[in-house]
Length: 445
Ligand code: PLZ
Image (cartoon, rainbow, N blue to C red; front, side, top):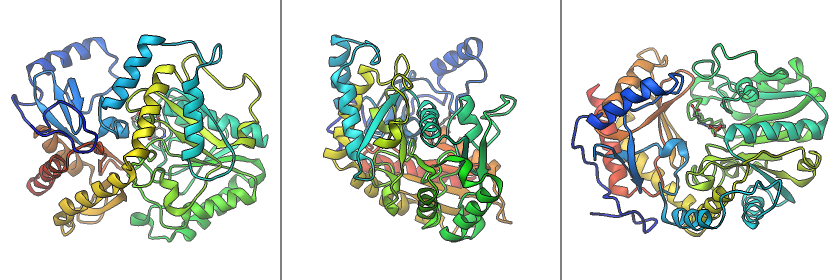
C-alpha cells in the first residue's frame, strides 16, 4: 500500500483496482433510485457512486478503486478529505456550525479575508466578501462593479463560463446544456471575441484589438461597468489566450475606468503552476473571483479586490445566510495554509511535466489538434481530418477511459476537449498509470 507523498495523507490504497465491471451492482441500484428520485436535469458523467476518496483515488460503493483525474472539477486540489481539512472541519463543527456572519461574527471569516487579500495578485489595499458558490461570487463582483462605476454594461467573452444563475447564465457563452430554454437572461451583458490561438491564429495584441474594437463600437467604454474573463478558459475548452491578450484588455480597462474582473474560480489556488493564473503574465485584476479549490471541497467562494471598489457596496448591500460559513472558513484556512506551506504551485508544475511526458507520444497523432494548458490544468483538443472539432471521438475515448476505472472530464464549446485536473495529492505513479490508460484509449479508439 502506498500513500501519497505530498500530504502525508490518506489511508486509502493508492492504486487502481476494479472488482466489478463499471458500474457495479450497488452503483447500478443507486443509479436506478437516482433516476426515480432526482430531477433529470441534474446529470452524472460517470454512473458511479462514491463511498470514500483521498489522495488520487475514488472508492465506489462496490469497492472499486478509481483514479481521479478530475478533482470534482478542480476542487479537491489538495486531495479529497485532506487530513488538515478534516481536522479543521471536525473541530469547528463540534464548537458551532452557524451564526450567520451578518448577525454575529467569528474570527475565521476575517482570517480567510486577510489571507485572500494577502495571497491574490497585486500589493494594493484589498478587501474580501465571502459567498457559497462560484456563480454567487461572480454575481456579487458584477454588483460591486456596477455600483462603483454607476454604469450598466458588462462584457464577457466567447467560450467563457461563469455559472448557472440568471446573471451568470447571461455571462456564460455556451447555450447547451447551460442556458437552453432558461431565459430570458439578464440584460446589459455583451459578448466579445476571445483569444483562441489554435483556432484564430491571432497574437494576443491582435485578438485584444479585435475584442476592444467590437466593445467600443457595440457597447462604448462609458457604458461599461466591467469586463470579466477567465485567465485560462475552463468549461470553454482549457483555452490559453495568446500572450499579451489579458494584459492589453486590463490596461484598456484601467484607462477607461472599467473594472477588470478575473474569474479564477477554476484556475485559482495553485492549479496552473502559480497561485493564481493571472500571475503568469503579471496581470493584476481589480477584482478576482475564487471558489472551488479554496476550501478543499467545502462550499465557499470569494470576491477580493481593490478596497476602494469593494467599498462602493453600501453597508448591508452584500451578504447571504450562509456566505462564509464557519465550517467552510475553517476548511479554507487549512487549505490555504497547505497551498503556501507545501508549495503546491511547484507541485502543479511537476504534475505538468509528468502529464506532458506521458502524453508526448500522442503529439504525432493527427487527431490530437493541440495539447495545451498550464500546471495541473491541461487539455487535449481532438479534431477530424479537416481540423474540425471531433466531439464524437472525444466521447468514445472518454467512455473507454471511464470503463478502465479512470475518472476523466471533458469540456469545450465544441465538446472536443479532454481536460486533466488531477488532485495535486495524487502520487506520481498513479498519475502516470491514469495517463497511460488515456494514451491506450486514444490509440485503440
Ligand atoms: N466560473 C470559471 O469554472 C464552475 C461548472 C460545472 P459554481 N465550473 C464548473 C457545471 O457544469 O455546473 C465555474 C467556473 C468559472 C464560475 C463557475 C461557477 O461556479 O460554484 O459552479 O457556481
